[in-house]
Image 1 (cartoon, helix red, strand yellow):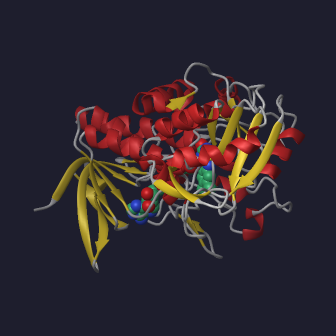
Image 2 (cartoon, rainbow, N blue to C red; image 1 turned 180 degrees about the vertical axis):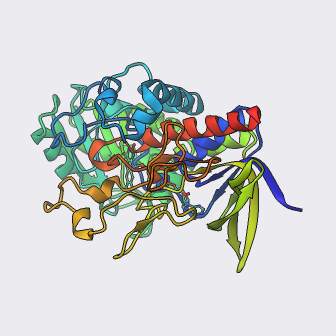
Length: 438
Ligand SMILES: Cc1cc2nc3c(=O)[nH]c(=O)nc-3n(C[C@H](O)[C@H](O)[C@H](O)COP(=O)(O)OP(=O)(O)OC[C@H]3O[C@@H](n4cnc5c(N)ncnc54)[C@H](O)[C@@H]3O)c2cc1C
């Protein structure tokens, strides 16, 4: 029997999941198709809306992202959804994450320390990072682990102090208590903290066993020296981060926070879990693990519509029919936009991706310059429908959301998750309304 849904979303990242959630909450049947892990497993778990204006040459950061949105270029996805669209999407996000995230009390960006010792402007941050804000003047001890080499705590503390934060920062590197493999993954440490596993601890000429949270606090205590808060790399539990933090705070007598990390990102995985749960609760069906490779033309409403997308499975191409489609396949990193020496393309629907024919124009001379490739992606009309090279809608029943959209440079602007959320919610709602109205 043919697979038939009202709305099919392609892509399982923050854009695809918010599109699917928003559509399902409008009361239509939604299926989400996704191939591999999304960027959530690599990204920090922070939800940036807008930290810097494009071409600001690093000047800033912006204190109020909403005030700055109207100053963005016309082609920017935020100009398509508008300030209200961004606010509505954040309200959806806040509802999904509840007290797992902070920042909804103000329009102002928070400044969160990063694992490199920089300070990052962001709109929403995990509750686990709240005690670490750079605007807080309490003295901080950063604690790194010998085997977690991405976080050099003494160096990060030095960088923070040189960046002029209003607090004293020190760093210490310790070994994670217990007999863990030298190459243990950070998820292994997180699991141990979740379960409060008992670990062997060396004393003065003896070995004893302690619950790992207590053992960790004991290892930190000699370095505390009056610090009012202690920051750890973000591995304080995958499933019970509040409980782990509370235990450490009680043992240490100091506030405890997580410093967001690079891949694999435990806060990103926690966020993925929250979004997946909300989608399932809203009735979204997930089909994962295989790529969408192309599409069939001629849907219900006319021959220019997409009738189905085709998923490659064991050498066969399985059609998934729907009334409306959302393309949320990510950007250059996730291969939602593909490039080779000849050009830049959107691989499923072959949507037009504006770019210069001369590939030397794709890059700026300076390594950290304003590279055109960072803004590559599909262009849309004001209903997020991709446009062809003449500026006409490619397919009446296709919308695009997230990093597959052009016109923004998420890394330079610090706008990644915000763009995905805002366009995901708008595309999902619009696709669902189209179904309801037909
Ligand atoms: C290292 C790193 C750190 C970051 N840090 C931050 C940060 O601190 N704050 C912030 O706001 N943003 C950050 N970002 C950016 C932000 O995470 C992304 O912009 C955002 O997550 C993109 O979401 P998306 O859903 O649009 O795309 P993606 O997360 O890339 O998801 C795309 C999905 O589409 C699927 N897909 C692709 N092609 C196909 C296909 N043919 N068939 C089926 N499925 C397909 C993929 O498997 C994936 O599930 C960071 C990004 C990176 C890479």
